[in-house]
Amino acid sequence: MSHNDENSFYDKKQKLSLHNKEGKAKFIKHICALSNSNPTNNSYIVIGIEDEVNKIIGVDFFDDSKIQNLANAYLKNPPKIQYENVPFPTLPRHKVIGLVTISPNNKITSLAKNSWKYQRGSVFFRRGSNSMPSKGGFELKNTNQTIVEAIEKNAQSNIELTLNGVFDFINNHKKEYNPKYKVFNEQFVLCWAGKKTTINGKEFFSRVDIELINEQVRLFFSALDEVQISYNSNSFIITEYILLGIDENETHYPLEKTIIHFKNNGKHDIVKELLFTPPIFDAAVIDHIFTNSNAIVSKIEKLQPLSVTEHEDVLRLPTNYLISYLYGHLEAPNQLRKAKEYIKNSTDKTTYIKYKEAMRVLRKVKYN
Image 1 (cartoon, rainbow, N blue to C red):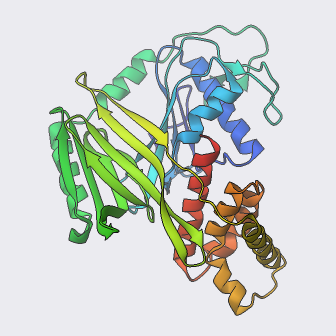
Image 2 (image 1 turned 90 degrees about the vertical axis):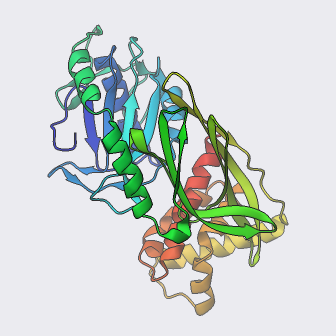
Image 3 (image 1 turned 45 degrees about the vertical axis):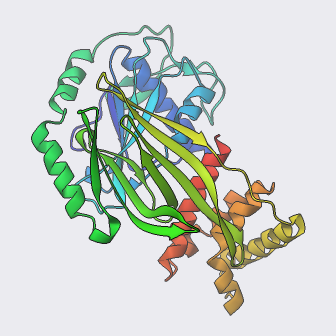
């Protein structure tokens, strides 16, 4: 799909920018247009494609908790939306292609409220590769069902591809990451890997990678989170934990449980449950941490040199701003974003990984 021109059932983007009003509004507009132009078949948005030359550049693993909530909040008759992280052979393991699947609902979808420059009640549709506003009465038309069904049928996995996928997964992970596979309901092949550690008598895995091989979908990927894994004959269960604390006093807190349930009809569903309860810290201490973090960010914005202590504090900015947000400093995510480029260009790459993890946790907490 990446080398095909965009059309009335398919769009491609370099990245999603859901943290600002313009990016959010444009994404909602495309969802609305694709839904209206495909009332009886799926439509798709592929994320991670450089549009001008169709280069596959990939994106970071993206948690989809925000996508459906956005559609529900901004659209009347919102379609069901699924975001999947798809591994690609030419990309490094930490990069994927994002695939947004928009299911048909055979209803006219419109904006339920104003979004950026788009007015409430607006109806969009696809004309070629463009999402256009409807100038008058809009009528749903079935124009793409046959071609989309043919494309989807051709893309279904076979047993050779599944076996190759299992071997590739195992060969791409070192032995210390314990790569394994399990077959559910004689239909689904799930592979997972992670570095095992024991903390206070409990087994955790870090750097976890989980893929549903026969659908070529990455279900979970995390660079730093420690998770617990369990499974039974029909379900695979992932419980995420995050390490939070002030200075060196850090503790594991359960964040979210993900249950992948495999059905007998050849389908599966994924249920997520937020488990997080913010830790209790002294409010005065949190206020001090937030003020100190803001002072560091201010110096970064002004290109002023940091002291040795301030440079060390940069390493804790993601965690400190996350804790500050949980204690009511709602501007903390925007403050953290101001330091993104500085953190990204830092010689300590772990800090940037922590930045991305902190933003992911903030998104989970905010939208649940």
